[in-house]
Each structure stands twice: as structure tokens, then as C-alpha cells.
Image 1 (cartoon, rainbow, N blue to C red):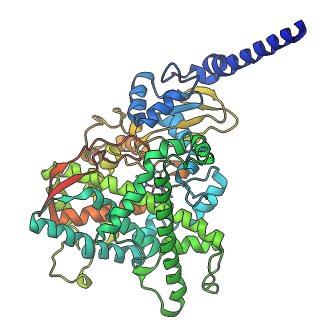
Image 2 (image 1 turned 90 degrees about the horizontal axis):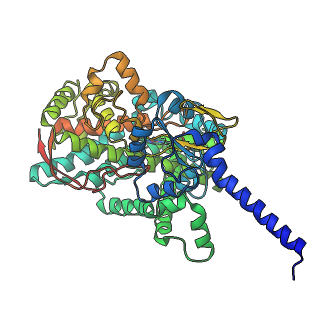
Image 3 (image 1 turned 180 degrees about the vertical axis):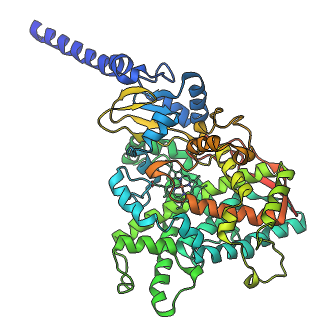
Length: 531
Ligand code: HEM
């Protein structure tokens, strides 16, 4: 039998515990925390993350958060310690401009081989070291002046892409550009990354393309669990239940192994180059740069040294991240661009006139040997206003990374969107999907209208540039934005110099609601005609 004392003590302990829990999980987050003043997305948001998990799991996040910003203002509390911020001053300028750290979310979702990439690094100091290694190779001046890129782009366009489109035009067979655009973006990028010989040829090798895309997209079905609630997956794996989806692990492993194979071939190219030299086109520009910086070799004396295993994996992890970043984002952008342009023949004619005004236009015929083709001056191509406006408008209306880019507030507390004392450790995020729909900056935001970039006053244009967030902003903004823009410009210029397109059959073109945002229907069949 328990004594009266023990009963009273147990009673007191229970009361204290309940009071503590009520205070910690209800009173403090709902009424005392500085976050309590911020409009809540849902009545439960201050107390538990279930609502936030729900909109993510069911792929409703971007659209729901945008609806909330329209009614509740530029800052909304999505979960107990999770905020969405949709403004420039006190918003993206503070969060991303000041370089708030990244949460584990990035490592959980984007690390390769179990090691960090530049993209997944949490803290700004190690990130800055890695970024310094790569910023030169991805700078606009380097990309525009690169003999590798110039020769490789000519090869991809004139040997692979234009002949394929010509065949569809001549035989009047509709072309599904959805998978092809991933291939075009990938082939363009990987020549710069690993060299023309080692890089992919997914435009022509359809079997490899299908297998790569299947492996690449398969883990998406479990991405919510592995990134938002990784502990659940961890415990399931621990109890030998094989994780939530074993086929995802198999797919990830296949891609990681493929990338290691490419990396080893690029390594051989560098080691062999000491004897025979190396063609510009075959130089693995990005790989060679990072390999050299990571291994701290001082070429050419140490050119024969191989990377140690741990350094090889560090380089491989970043290389895989870059090729993944390059093909999906640019592929989706090209698909939406073709979708919009194919509904506007008049704009196609204006674009074609601009492209044909280049001193060396990208005109293609089967009878002209590729060795005699002189591609346009990179700076002249880059400066074409209509081409630039069409790509910018596509990235605005259909940003291929529309979703949340989470960061963690620093210590001491900060002010966001006019709300003071936001505690350290709060997850804060903005969405290109929402920023790009600000009607004060982009009137009639749902309409794809490239002219808005051409006709804006200098003040409007400055405002549009501040709110244009397709590549993010600040120290963690996309390092590949220049090569992405330049690759897409080459592809669009080559195709619309030579062809006219109309939609033959489109799948559901509604944008996927996640971090990435490709068309849900995964199909865009075009009718292609010679211009
Ligand atoms: C249309 C094409 C592209 C778009 C729209 C795009 C968009 C973005 C965005 C929004 C971010 C920031 C994401 C975040 O912080 O959550 C980012 C980061 C990044 N992107 Fe891209 N990207 C594109 C192409 C590329 C290409 C071609 C590369 C190849 C190098 C690349 C490599 C990266 C890397 C390495 C980061 C991480 C940067 C860092 O943390 O410092 N991206 N990209």
C-alpha cells in the first residue's frame, strides 16, 4: 500500500509534469512566444507540425501557402517553429542576403554517397571555401569565353538535336519534348562538366535516357518521409523492414555508381592528357577544377597523382549534385517554354527574326558538314533581348524550383517582415512560386508575357529583378545560373531558328507542387515544321 505521502507526491509530480507540458506545447507557443503574434496558417499550426506535414505530403504546399499570403500578409506561421516569408525588405533580403544557415533538410534530401555537397552544407564558412573553388569556372565571363563549351554546344546542337528535330519535321511525326528536354539540358551541361567524350549522350541513346530518368525520379515517392521526418524512415530501417521503399535505394545506388564511372573516365582523360594533349571539347572543365582544388595538387607536376578514395567521393558527391541540378531544372523550363511559345506563332516569328539577325545564325541543313559551321558569337547570342525575355518570363511564370528554400534563424533573435524577436533556430523559408505572383511587381502574374521584361521602365525592371527568384539570391544562390541560361539560350535559339512548333498533344501541364515543379502530366507532344 502506498502511504498518503507517496500518493500526494505522485499527484504533485503528475500535476507539475502536466503543467509543464501544457506550458511548453500550448501556452508558450500559442500565447507567449514572439511567434504567437504572427498570423497562423491553421489553428493547429502554433502547436504541432501536422498541418505543415499534411500540405507537404499531399503536394499542396506552394499553392496553399500562396493563398494564405494573399489573405494573411507577407509572413505566415506554418508550424510551431516554421514561417513562410513573402517580401523583399525584411524577407528574402534578410534571410538569404545575410546568409542564414541551412537546416538538415538539405542533407537529408540532396547529399550523395552519404557526404555533404556544396548545396547541402549547413554553415556559411565551409560553404564559402567550397564555393570559392568553383565560382570562377561557373562565372559568366568564363562560360561565355570557354572553347570547351563553344565546341561542345556546336556538337550537341548540330550532330544530335537539330538532326532529330529535322527528322520529326520531315516525317511529320509529333515529338514528345518532355523527356527530350532533360536529355538536351544534360548533354549540354555534362560536356562542360566531364568533357564531350565522357559526358552523356541522352539525346540519341533513348534506352539510357529512359533508364536514367526512371532511376532519377523513382525516389520522389518517398521524399517526404526521408526529408521531412527522416527519423521515421530510420526506425523502420532499424527494425529490418527494409525502409519505406527499397527500390528507391536501388535507384539511387545505380545513379551514384554511374556517376563514379564517369568520374573515373574523366580522371583517365586528365592523366592521359599529359602525353597526348587534350581537345578543348574533351576537357572535363568542372571536374578538373574541383579535383585540383580538393586534392590540393599543383598541376602539372603532380598531374599523375590519383585522388585518394575519400577525396574522390567528395568530388563525386558535388559532381552528381551538379548534373542532377542541371538537367531537371533546365529540362522543365524548356518544356514550359515550348508549351507557351507553341501557342503563339506570332511571337515565334519575332523571335526567329531576332535569331536570324545574328551574324552567324544557327541555321541547319543536313548537307552542310559540321566542320564548316560557325556558331554565333557567344556574347551576341547572350545579348539578344527577345530570347532573354522569353527565358526570364518562363522562369518567372513556371519557376522550376517553385518550392520552399528553408533556412534557420541565427542567434541573437532577428526581425522579419516587421515582426521582432524571431527566436534563433526558427525554420524560415520563401517560395519563388509566391514571390513571382506579386501583382504589384508582375501585373497579371498568371499570364506568360515576355514583353513585360522588354517594356518595363528602369524602376519597374529593378523591382522585377529584385523579386525574380528563379535562381534564389545571396551567397547560396544557384552557382550554375550562367551555364543554365547560356545552355537554354543555345537550345532555344537553334530550334526556333529552324523550326515552327504547335502543340499536338499536352498532358496535364499544371505545375507539380514541391521543391521542383515540372508538368504533372509529363508529356508535351509538339508538331514540328521547318520554318
Ligand atoms: C534553369 C536552371 C536552374 C535553376 C532554375 C536553378 C535554381 C536553383 C535554385 C533556386 C537554387 C537555390 C536552392 C536552395 O537554396 O534551396 C540553386 C542552387 C544551386 N544550383 Fe541551380 N538551378 C539551375 C541550374 C543549375 C545548373 C546548370 C547547375 C550546375 C552547376 C546548378 C547547380 C546548383 C548548385 C551547386 C546550387 C547550390 C548553390 C549553393 O548552395 O551555393 N544549378 N539552383
